[in-house]
Length: 131
Image (spheres, rainbow, N blue to C red):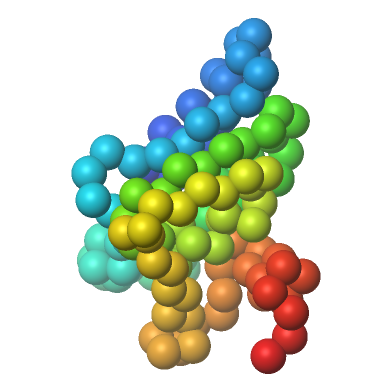
């Protein structure tokens, strides 16, 4: 995920909220549901104006997550493979998550020394319990 992709997903959510559908089905084409944030893209963008670019990226993530939180129709997610980082963190914001036998989940935030994204520091303990 990078800001343009997050913007496209937000636009799709906005369009779906305005049509006469009863729910939104979110899935992926291919063998990976979501590989999370594209850190190589994001770090590459920081070389110019670090503060401005960091703010833009943070706002893109915030707006992406907010779009899921504010979406009024049920969101059903079909996961066909790995869901990493932000791709896994948004799942508790959805109403139904169906995972194939090829699906697996990883949130490597502590490993790469980042704070959890997508409200997962709140939603994961609510769903999974406290470790």
